[in-house]
Image (cartoon, rainbow, N blue to C red; front, side, top):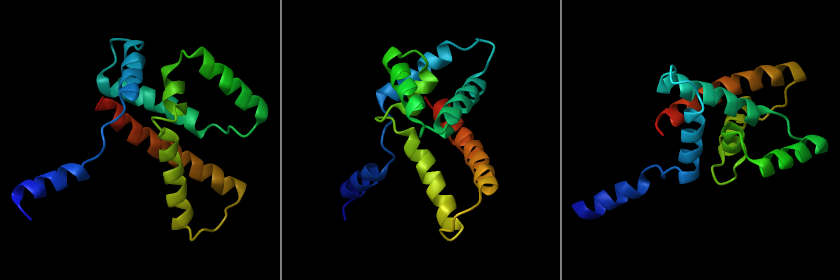
Length: 136
């Protein structure tokens, strides 16, 4: 393989760029936060809010109707980050749930263990999202 082909191959393996929509929503959320917060503090605060939105149980039909109304109004960038299918942060939550499920041998757990696992996943989501939002 020539050097040029090797460089192209490595470039193709790089992480895909984040969507412009995500970058804009992060900037909008940061702009609404106090200037006294550092970029790291803003990223952590936003990550906590987005992780909370991602973890929220959306199975209730009334809740889903409220979500659709909230999406139509727009407004909260944390909510839009959590629910925008193009950004697909929910996919990150699903990935973390699947990792936990396979790590325990695909066994089901009781309600208390599920709640503990959800709290651990939320903490990991906050860490990952804060790092991601800081890079914006």
